[in-house]
Image (cartoon, rainbow, N blue to C red; front, side, top):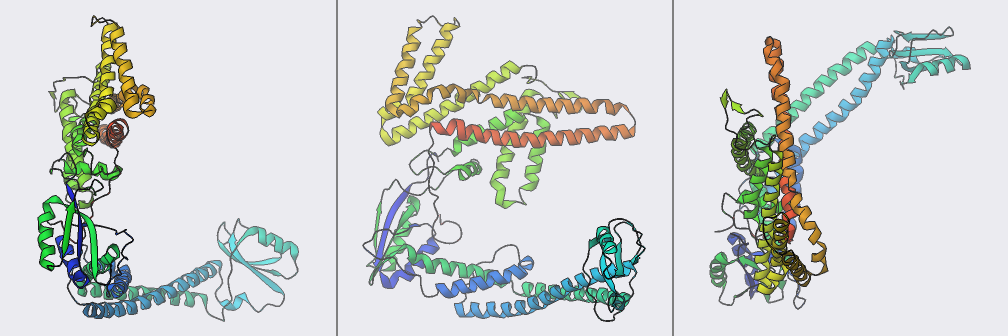
Length: 601
């Protein structure tokens, strides 16, 4: 629970004739994290024969889904065990029908685009007063200009077809060679290109274009209905796709094996609890199979936490997984993150809103369920701190019932900052203690005391010095000074010069937790301001009361949104920046078992 799950490094070897069967066994077991074979003594294997065909069919399915994916079931299908030939027939049948309908739809869309351009031209001419395309051409002495008027014009040497108002369509004819009129026309119009097209009637052509667009829309709807029916009748495509993905995964597995003309070798890691089952399966393959297990600190990381703490693995996936040989900080985050969050937000009403929203969203968003579960736990912490602070949407009462205020944030600012510093001191030292355990496990007691215990000694010396200076302890000042100097020497020995340079940063680390008080004060103050803005409005008529309710809803909604964001981000920062550096290295590689479905327990 406090360390990643124990792993065994395994090497499996067997005659090549059993390779495909071994791949099936390992896939079904879904427990072996296969390592790329890097030893140059043996060549790397090649994909099985059906890999290329499976890849081609998956590409066809991707193309089909790009067209009908919106009508297919949202959930993926159970892997179908059909043969490649049967899968190919099914995929080909659907692909041909989808291609036929898609090509028809694409042709209609292209025609629709052309009609759109024609409609724009026809509307332009109709609004300009041109009734037939005959009017646009066939003049030996006139030139034509089309466009939208920048402003109404009065041109004596031109014929203007237009409503003659700003931005209205206009067709203007003027005498060839009349440069003055041409310049005036150009200054009056934004250019619009109109091509003369036979002797068509403009209104009739526009009516025909609009009717054809309606026909195209009906045609597209019919095609969409056809595509929808194809999707509904092809639900097993998702099962075929899942089966092909499974087949491809198995077919490409030899790319991670060493394969000779007679044998194959697989290397990887398996959780210790699955070791017996793996050994049993491999030995049932053939008497000639060989399996060796050994300890290895370079194993992948598989986190093992109880259900209540598991959502907080989200922060490690977001940051970096612990290495296999170091402490899993999930519990550390689980215990402290909700406290930071609740301390900052600290309001019964706000906590109830966050809790209600989280519970409502939880069934709908499975992909972010870990984050929602974190919000639920943090909302409960917010309610608890709200009871301590005696705050309900910024007020000290609930429906006329006065709350008991155990700690008044706004009036007890100094105590609030002191509480934040104490929380920071505890949190940072918890990091040092976890670091001590890590060092002891890897390098023994001496290294643990020098590298991490020295920091605790430094803090003890600083605390003794402060108590002596304030008159709370009757100690010679040379004693704490000597303790601090000795601790610095230990840090130099344990962590090198880089550790010594970190000594001044220790105070900054602790003071950084003052942000807990700052954000909490800001949230409480804003809630108070919102209430004070709304309160006078409730003494007016119905309209003012409605306005007062709006002020409360909008104001507190904004404060809750800001509070959630600040509490979440700052709590993350205090873990990642202030505490993790004391014990956590991270950079673990995730455990990824070869297989499908849930891991075999």
